[in-house]
Image (cartoon, rainbow, N blue to C red; front, side, top):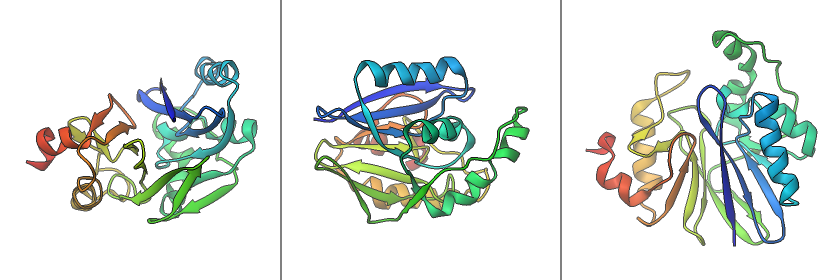
Length: 212
């Protein structure tokens, strides 16, 4: 049985997740920790639960989702999983930091690229990959059909969708991707977003104002 632990980090109230199972094997998703206190919060949770981080996953590479990426890679020495179309976003990290008024070094990590239709496996629990660009060019969603949940990053939120006015954003592309790839899934599917509260596919189909 998979467990999900969320943390709210950094200036953007970004959701970082740790996904783990009874074998204590775990994935770290979107490490947004930006200071020592936030980093210690993650470290303490991992230590107290005796978890082994096997992968670092990115839903996308916007600055608020990768502030702790170099720390995570240096600490756990495991590959960073992401879509190739967001590599250029990751490469712009230093410039993004300057826009927000702080210094951040370019990241130097081992990357493994994933594509639409690929699957990831955590001790037999399968995750399908959906490429849903529009918020960023390489945004992906990780979907576990067995336990009926997804990690959606900034694709879909409770009552909202990701911004499309950022670099290579595309409103129509994002709307179509959500409709054609996510809204066809079971209504009970839980959605763990990059910001805000969890929601469900059924709730968003009925109440999300962007789909009225």
